[in-house]
Length: 383
Ligand code: SF4
Ligand code: SF4
Image 1 (cartoon, helix red, strand yellow):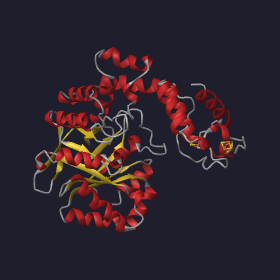
Image 2 (cartoon, helix red, strand yellow; image 1 turned 135 degrees about the horizontal axis):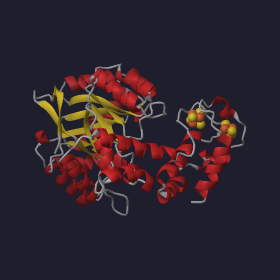
Image 3 (cartoon, rainbow, N blue to C red; image 1 turned 120 degrees about the vertical axis):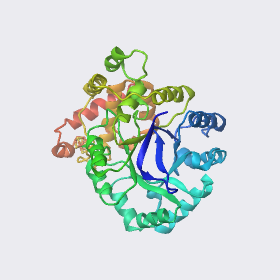
Image 4 (spheres, rainbow, N blue to C red; image 1 turned 90 degrees about the vertical axis):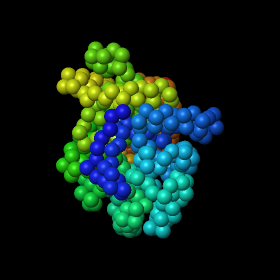
């Protein structure tokens, strides 16, 4: 297993050394009723740990609140100093500092531990961070660090580079967590800090944990033309391994989280990080070629900036475009159909557009929003 040393101590005076592959505890295998398949999931965790994975990342809301208690039952069987435990405060659920304190205490109960190695404010954007700070949650968590209840304090972020920079520069964070992969490099998008976000972590010397390195699994199943440059270099390597190696080759990346839900994914990831090879220049060029091919399939060049929102008819314009672009880039019709029919709110669909033109007047990309919405509604409905 590949490890990364941090220029930080862990609270007992030892240097922090994390496995480059971290286990994301949000996508465990499930039973038909949707609950965690605990027998299988525990085996996966044990296999990962035996192979050297020492970073386990859960959060209060994962698996509808069941991840923390389950992880707590598993880690109770392991020596406490043999692994790092990360969890996160759902700041959107906290209207007062007292509510945050109550959730924090509940997390210790659920996890059955008396300290948490890596504690994060979960899923921040600028407004959410400012509100948490205003409530005193940030100061109070630094006090928890001083008291030894948490050992490293950081945050995960879903904002663009400007929002991320605002949060990053505001505190002497021990670490931070970002979505970063070879397709999410554009920092103009609504929720992506991209290359600029990564560069900021280097500049500020704040160690970085990576989430969504495979973009929720989409980079694990590439269409044939996008996969071709990678296959030409190594026909046996999985698409996921290229995405993981690309992000893990960045020098400030300390952990790459993967939410492994099956034995074959775990096996593939363990082999990627068991004999880790940073990407070479030729491999990097091939990965960029793959990204360019994927981007060439984009149906509409929406950056997700949301300047066009709100639409008076309730249409979520960037979300409609995002799902349409995903169809263009990856195919994966079954998954997109499921997302469109079962998860995308009907009230926000393109069909409600009355062609008033308000959105097109402000779109910095000058996109033909009205015509594109009409086309996407027809195409997604016909899947
Ligand atoms: S043109 Fe359609 S999508 Fe744009 S603001 Fe008007 S109703 Fe909303
Ligand atoms: S449609 Fe234009 S304004 Fe709206 S999110 Fe996309 S790029 Fe931004």
